Each structure stands twice: as C-alpha cells, then as structure tokens.
Length: 165
Image (cartoon, rainbow, N blue to C red; front, top):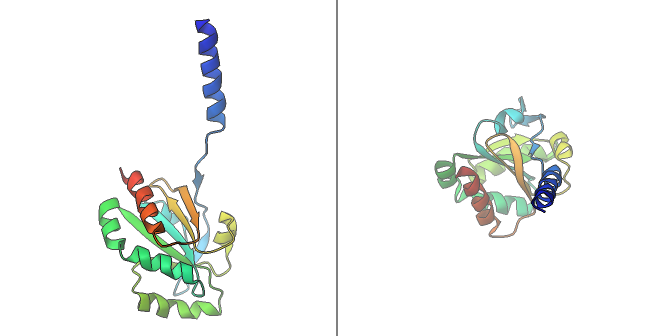
C-alpha cells in the first residue's frame, strides 16, 4: 500500500511539473531612443535589475495616468528594490514628435524608447495600452497587466517587492 501511495504521489508530481508555467523571456528586438538610435531592448531588461516595461502612447490617457502614478514613487522604488522602469511609446512616426515635450512636461525620469513600427508589441502579443510587464533579474516576464485603474501601482509595488526579497 505504501508503494502504491508513493507511486501515486510521484506520478502526481511528475504530471503537475509538466504543466507548471514556464517563464517567458523578454524578446530580443530593436527599439529606438528618442533621438533615433537603435538599441536592443534585451540589453536593458537583462541587467540583474527588476524591470518594469510600460507600453504607452501620447493619445492614451490611462497610460499617462499610470506613468504619472508610478512617477510619485519611482525614486523610492529604485532605492528600495533595485528597480528600473522603461516606458516604450507605440506612437507612430507622425505623433512621435510630441513625445519628448510630453516627457519633459510630465517630468518622467524613465528610460524612454519608441516602438513606432510596433515590432516589440507584436512579439509580446498584446493589443491595447497601457500594457505593463514586470521582468525579474534574469530577464523573465513574471507578471503582465493591461489597462490602468487608480491603485494599480500598489499591486505592482507588491509584486516588485516580492521579487526583491
């Protein structure tokens, strides 16, 4: 009977491990700095830091509210959690010209990139912004969130804090 119980337990563990979620690594795609220089996003999310990548656009009010809300805590989170936020605009080439002025007006101290051709967006397979990804210190996506409601930044901080511990 003990042998049967042991075999059943081992079978359960084997089957459940086969269906365990596999961490998805962040893709290796080129994005552009605001001055047009091409960079590989993978170089920025795989630096041993907890990283949040937030996709946004100048025409997206919830996107701007999310980035404004995080800005209130950004310095503190950087110090407390060895954390970085990368804000990637999906504005097209025509509206991209508005981005630097908006970022300066808002006082966002984030690394800002452009995905005007939306290649990274397509690789990550999402449709709407804001879209937020939390990447662990190994460059793996461990959480993603679509949309923004006031208070979402507190849930994000809880997840960042859990990674930092």
